[in-house]
Image (cartoon, rainbow, N blue to C red):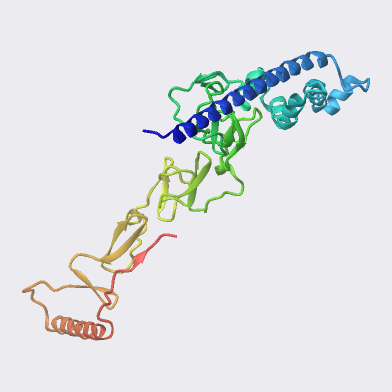
Length: 352
């Protein structure tokens, strides 16, 4: 059971909240009316200035040299100066506070968003959105999660009539800050994105950069707002994308076969690449090696025949073979003492 003091505190707290909301509601309604008046006066200003020019007398020359009056900054300034009565503080304050928005709409958004009232009052500064709706088309808020008020990374979606906790949703991935949900509603583009002629933030393709941002043995992969450098296929000497069919040229040991880099079989060349006696060629990917032929073994850099078991040989041949055999054993023992872990391997050749 609450005490009288607690009930009294609760009563005054609720009264303060309700009074604050009512005051806020009146402020918002006043801001919306002011904004609508500004938008209406801007359209009237467009109508009043549509037949004017730069005032120099030579309209054709002025439009060639100074650009067209109808889209000029001079015309914009003339319209802005007549939006408000000098005695209307709220009107003049709103125009001064949001002058950058008028310039953005005038030079970048006017073609895509001809309705200044919707773009400025509803979408951009959010002072005229209906209850339970948000954005340029006042979309339904029922499926949008509650969040914090307008921040750097969120678009404010306030319920101006019920004045409950404001709603937020994420800006488009291209936006650093925004007033709505699309890439056309960015106030500023994120790094890796650039603004087009219509004011929308589009991805910058860093892979078109000159000089290239990746190394010679890499290709550039563009991603939304960024890029990455990927290694070329080993058969390539420079490439544009992944795969043996995207090589700028083929690496040593490979050849272009109908647009794809394939292995060169050096062992099938007309001129033998293994020129020593009793050697044969073994092809590898991108290379080859020369080894002793079957029933031959390498001894002191020479491929010598291995005697078959039970074979009859002459005394001279037998003596020569024994000499080579024991000499080989002696050399192997000597090598094992000096470098026991060293294993002699066939020489590998790489095409250049």
